[in-house]
Length: 569
Figure (cartoon, rainbow, N blue to C red):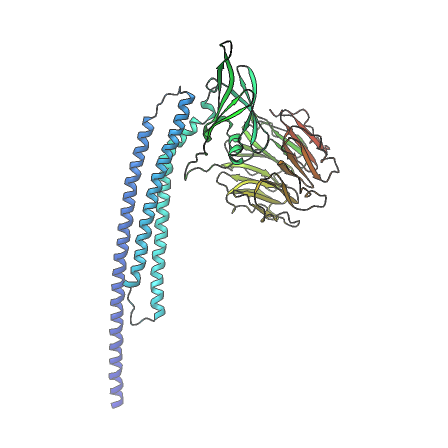
């Protein structure tokens, strides 16, 4: 009996101790929850304060932008000199506004980071270890708190950045639209331009000839921009409507006004050069290209006027229309209705065209979906492979549709790309830093380009890849069964084109070289002169001359070489 009573007393005491322990633990948890709620409310107060200050600052910038817009002269009859002044003014205003937005963004970012870092630091001191939890449990509880704060910090930083960016785009939109108007082709009438730009013939990396018409006379002006970089030269060629050409006069011995030079300006790049009618050149000043910060990023792309496919050839005329010849079994030559085209590319049995507005059109065989490009936007370059199509977007990313058997369309993760080339079953991309990336079939090592550097142009053939270096020499990898990769030692090359089993190179002097399979005479190009562009097809080669006419060599079974009557001017 005594044992039973003793056991009962011990049981009651133990239960009492357990109850007391649980009560104390519950109080501690309740206290910690209260402290956590207080911290959460503090977080909300800080974020609300930041949001309010951001809204006030954004409103101030919006009002400032509206005042600037109201100050603009609405007169449409504006001179070229006023246009240049207005364009510079708008660019300065855009820069000022975006700089202010970036300051707000940076200030908010620092405050958010500082607040959360302080909370994380305090959490180590404010969270007390319970006598009922192990050291590992206590450490885990602190880490959970830290992770929660880190997640909140990440969320608030993202929301702050997005809000500022949207406001930035909203506020600066009127300025960018105004600037686009000042640089648009429609703005300049023939009278205002004084001299009309007819065409530009690209000679090499840094030289081109401007063909202009003034007072019923035609002039060819040699334009040399050696020293400012290939990217800027190519950008000038793409934005030809931004050239303003003004005649300059002097007085001759008979006291008569005489045309002596043209003052050539490019508004987009703030370049200005005096070129006399005898082609002697004097620099007046060059400044770097002005970019819209955080909103637009301009890429350079080499547009194509010639495209050779499997058994068809496509040509782009200066007026933006397209012509084609050769095999049309799949409708790949049905391009007569295309307009506003700025670049073309031909695949095995399909054709792709890039429009002035950055959209893309296609025709021909669509078995693999290689022509499903109607929804593409903001495209700056295109390349048609055997049965797939690749597009380069203005932000440097790449998209692709069509046959992906070898992973040749796996380009979605590419960034900072400035040029693309689609081959038989692989795709090659040129990066801003001159390195090269590739995906797809690598059976012949055609994708082994990771060690390349200093590249300025690329071309993917059926089973090989060719790269043009800054020093105007060429490198190649891949299938070399017909010596199509035997291009070492070739110099003064300014353009390249790779086909199934032959490779073609354009020299600085307008002549052409070729190597590889010559079964159909596709490499018989040594007599070509004054060539400005080349395109290698399956087993034939096409060349574009400076006067807009074309030459050919190789297989003509499907009339794909019937280009002798073409005039692409």
